[in-house]
Length: 337
Ligand SMILES: [Zn+2]
Image (cartoon, rainbow, N blue to C red; front, side):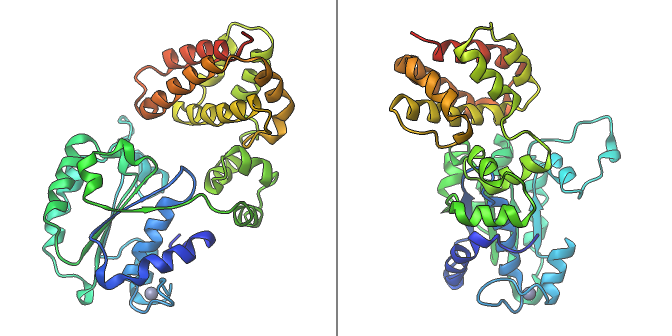
């Protein structure tokens, strides 16, 4: 849990090498499923380690043992309760009537203030891990901004995010950016196969090259080609009013399928130019057939709509309405002119 993923080790060493003039706040960002959160956590462990090896956490010293056990006094994790529940760090049963929060609340930021005034273990770093940064609500983001304007001593903030453009711009401007690239496919494939993932190549392609996303989808037993995509490809070239597609979309998370449609849209525009699909090589024939007949202007309009929805999808007020609307307009936008 506290090691860098294989493709992260080289960039991590470069990042940690300049430890003496380290920024006090970092925004670690990249495409979903490429391991930003894992990078931030492993980064925290490396900063706290008492005898780092080649810049990275040794895994054996007292500090590393504390980090692994989740009780290092100089490490705080600030994340939504829903995320803590997923990690098994928070008991759902504590208050079963209430849905765990999906936001980082102001109390969590305020709760850090006394911690800044305590001495650190052996005078080392204090690390605040904050993820995903998109979960900061506006009030919490402003409280964090205030802290970063007069940063406490010996303290490093590691924020991990998938979409920096969803964050408060003033907050982003207080952080040094550390963009993480999509890892090389060969490294991702080797890693997925080592985790026992079947159909690793198809899964990786469908996940847009994001290995952690591919792993998650494999572990959840999701089909390589999701139901909604099958339905969409069938109905785009055939008939149907989109009702079945809307039902399939409603069964999923808007953020997931909006992201999925954006990948399909890229494949369709590649197809319109006679190029093979990047994300869905297994569906090449069906994608090409749709792409041959579509109206590029309608495709572009739908792409704009998808981009807009991608910003809003996490906070979809009415997922059913969104699914209905998406099914109708997206099907219409790819049907023959
Ligand atoms: Zn160590």
